Image (cartoon, rainbow, N blue to C red; front, side, top):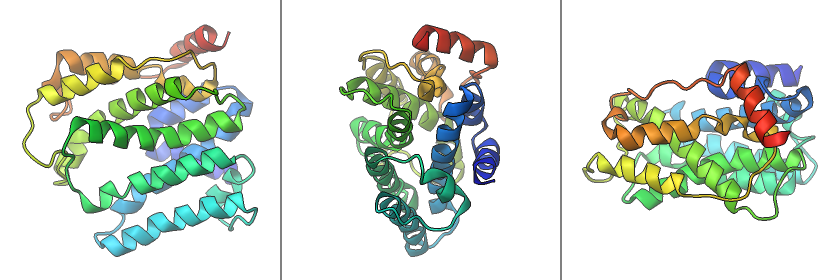
Length: 246
């Protein structure tokens, strides 16, 4: 039942990631869904209250969860019960770093440099990505490619979320920035490379380079929410799996 609860949560909160998960083999879904459900819970924790201290407590709750899983004493919770059997030590550490990065959503202080933003999105996306790869026994020894995938996917997801941040009066930048910063960030992320990682855990990255290439050409689309939706359908997922994992 806890796995179904995770599926329902991801489907409601992150339909794009849910679609990527449903394209994965059945055994991989049992790994991906609890990790993605935990990511959803962490992501929305800072936005459930206007009180910074309460938001900090909500994030700390998840830090405690990951520590308890590592020590073999997981608490009773429908997401935690599904996550505990599959989460490894490196994944727990990466998810803890993700929680710390989410404190940015509490205090809403704009980024001062593009590098700061890239580091932020990489940490947030690397958490679930590394946790999934470790659980599937697909974690590479060299993490450079994994960090490249995390940065590209994280940036694509962040850029899609910029209009929502603006609507919530959350500053993206500490000072006024020219739109070319979005173009430059995408170019920098696209230049990151590494060895191919063969795993269904990376199906969700199938479209992100298309998003970044679009923003390189149309940086003004970011803040007005005009980035096209590049859906991960069954055909794309099957082709991606055959190319990467065949």
